[in-house]
Length: 370
Image (cartoon, rainbow, N blue to C red; front, side, top):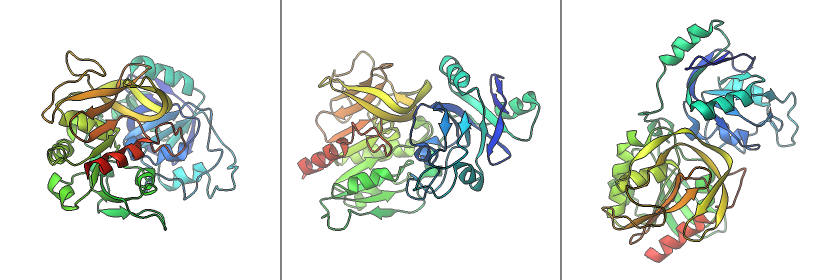
């Protein structure tokens, strides 16, 4: 049984581990990449419903995970695959969910659930294979924590620093510090392929600790939770900007940059999660189809518009990208300092790859700062 906090109830069959779980109910519109979705730390404390009708067709393997574990708190699918049909498969999705203790439900109402969340917004929910009374489960849902105010970056971040080096035969051109707010494995790998030696630091690393690594540039990653709750990352961002180091942020890292520049952030009604979000660069008019996973966004500065400069403590800045579906801010840039960010994922492992050039743009920024 799946119960939303407003009392909406769905029934289905158990998928994954038996038991009970709670989290923010969201949906993902991607037709590929379910293993990357499950292991993306940005989905921590969320129950994810997949809108694609068949999930699990290609099984799971030990090559594609984006992190050390599955992070979703629950999983909702319409029809789980009965067979894993891929030469790369090492286990079935059902077995993987069960082994990692992830409770899920297979049900016919995923379309109705998605439409309801689009109308009413993301909300808390619970999945139970134990409770038969919806009101009992709803009471537990209402007692579960909300996403607003949640500091989850420190929960999913690496406990210890580690280094990702370029492939054999590729010379090191730049030394990058990546602040892990919930980083995906594909991110440092993408930078390493361009000759970056990436030192990944915990989310709570200070500006002094970042500077001590003597980097050519600093990267702030994606991650889960409310950007307003991670003041430590905002303070680190301000320190890095004050030092004049080149900065690139994605997703939560973009929201951290926004807050460091004095902008507000807010919770979206149902968020952007999928691989088909159209984003326009307002400077060139070019549109990219992009991968997204975020429930919060940066607010437009008062009295300004995308492409119009506004003042910050670090000099003039501008909104560089917007989402064509709803006008949400998708990119920021300082005009007199080497710092920029985007709300989407240029490293998207299952695709699309329209935005992959942004890592090269970061390398160009570091080169120009030398």
